[in-house]
Length: 137
Length: 97
Image (cartoon, rainbow over all chains, first blue to last red; front, side, top):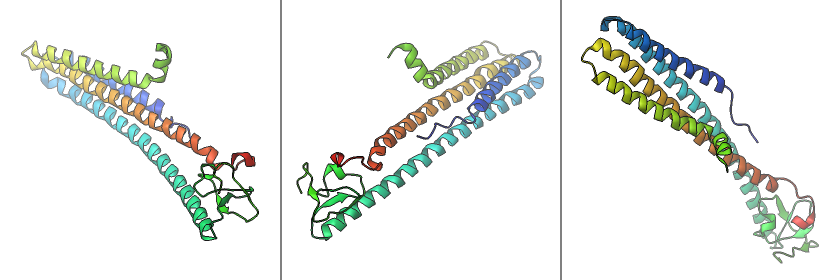
């Protein structure tokens, strides 16, 4: 299992708390100014802190999304490889006289669609292989 | 599932919902403050500590909620991988295949 990405979570938390604290302090500082002209700087500080907070959120979500997409992609590749191997093994078995398939290294003969061989690497069955009791090839 | 277990499992959704509610309350209070005075110099502090704080809190809340959704997807991938493992491992005895 691959671990859920946690790197950077602490930095995100510290950054968000800092941005919120900056905005609150800017609000308090602007309240102490008598004229709206002197408050412009604090408005700019507050808006900048809000933008930095939004950027931090965006980076964090993009990181998580990239990790999840990468993992999903790897899983699809794995599943595609498995399906191709099984299909190729079944086709080969049917092409060689329809004697069925067997799991590589084992001794029972199965039908290609037998659930006991689903998802496993199969090879054409040999003539002396014993039939599977489940699918009765 | 008791409340404590649910809270520890869903802490990011709880944080997200709480931050969004707080943000909405901050915006509402800021609006009331701005509406209560005709002077721009008295309105600006309400804009900063009401609207800007509210928007930042809503952003943090939504990020936390979306992060929880992605974590759920991650857990689903864990479960799928766990289900695939027996198919990939070589069978130990003939009785299984």
